[in-house]
Length: 115
Image (tube, rainbow, N blue to C red):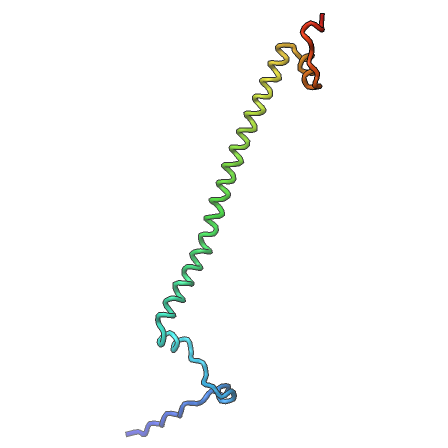
């Protein structure tokens, strides 16, 4: 039977030997020692990715609301312009420009003053 070489003794980390404290365990060892911490870390990472992914959706919803509000304000402005045009046409039809000018200047005409 062949002689198998004896395993080498575990080498101490040179950094750990210099500082006098043991080396930090690797990631695989940490996962094996504390699976709950690993699970919670994974859940936090998934929630962070989900939050970052839904930010774009929330921004697009906000933009859609703003667009609807702008459209509503434009329609109200169009209605005001339409009312203004109708009043201008009515005043012109009544040929009451002298009375309107007097009212805008802050003076009222007397009904018998024109005679």
